[in-house]
Image (cartoon, rainbow, N blue to C red):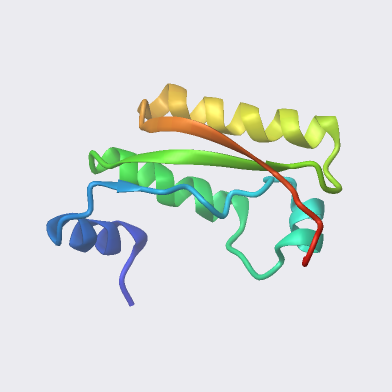
Length: 104
């Protein structure tokens, strides 16, 4: 089994230039259990992007809003992204994504 770093190194060698950033949704564990329990956790999402940035790959950050999150959840999410950006300077953009309940 390959590590996150090994996978990203192989992808970079194959020509990957950056990561999209989807899947962040909102980092609050209680909210993630309800809206995206099937996705990787916030810690893993942040680790993937931290590792990508360490390898010289830039990425985008996203935040899904307008569902069941609180203002505190959104603030905490943004603070985590800011913390990683301060460490790595690797995010190119922050993309806020409005939740659309139709067909969900």
